[in-house]
Amino acid sequence: MAHQKDRSLIAVIGDEDTVTGLLLAGVGHVDSKQKPNFIVVDAKTTLSTLEDAFIEFTKRKDIGIILINQHVADDIRSLVDEYHQAFPTVLEIPSKDHPYDPAKDSVLKRVQKLFGDDQR
Amino acid sequence: MADNGSTLGETLDKVDTYLRLQSEIAQELRKGFMHLAEAKYVLGPDTLSQFSYDRRMQASVFCSSKSEDLDLDAAVREIHLDPIHAEPSSMAGLRSRKPVRKEDSEGEGGDSSADAIRQPGEDDAKDIDSNKMSDVAAASPTLTFKKKDPIFMFSGFPPKSLRDAQSSFKRVLDIVQSVDLPSSSNDRM
Image 1 (cartoon, one colour):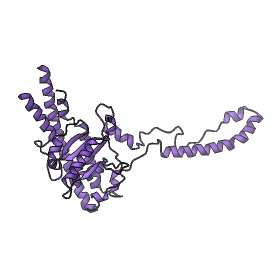
Image 2: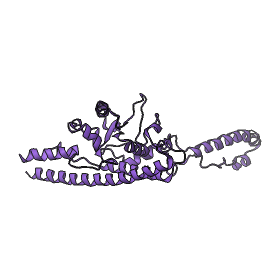
Image 3: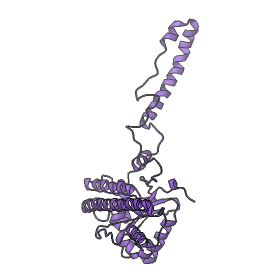
Image 4: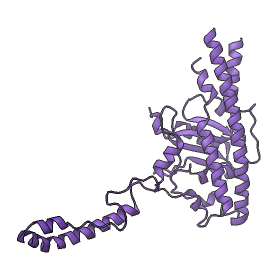
């Protein structure tokens, strides 16, 4: 099991502007096997590619946080909502054209579900 | 019962904080996207695209777990060479010279003169070496490898708008680092 301190990279799944901006900030990393910790999602990106990328990032031992545009997370909503691991942490962020909607956020949905279970 | 109440209160506080931080992230991202659009206008849309990404890039910003004392700033400082806070080398400065041992040469007799004849050569060599070492030490006080600023991936002379975009996105990462997911406390319920 990977130690928490080994999970130091920040992965990004988003549109070109989001990925470019975060790469500017310094999160971009391509390892020795030519595997990047980011993926640019555009109109040509297939659902299977997106799902595979998300699953791969969640399984990697060197990633601590996954930043994903909320509109991209909507495309793989079932996968994101079913994700319950503590690490890597998945955080939904807004994009240039799609503002943040708390009602869709998987983290808040999980909290709401827990409150709903407590009230029963 | 009381425990459940306090945990509920903590969770609600965390949700509140989480929403506030999300709002801050959204604000900084908006600024970042605006600066990025300006930079695209200046540099051209093809320059700031996924086709300009360096395929050998290495991360210069990392996340750290809350259990460790190391924060994001400290992690970045570790990676980047910080010449202001770097430890000074023992050779002390670019123009330092080894002090001449006047007492030794004056105090002793013929031997000292012989030594004085021999030693200057050795001392000169040592002085040259020490000067070279001090030059090298002054140029790179520590052996930490400095990672390339990712901004230069897109432009050799980045415009102000690109630097502003970089600052905005770096602030986003700072906020992300401080997000404490409210669902993490629910695992303990």
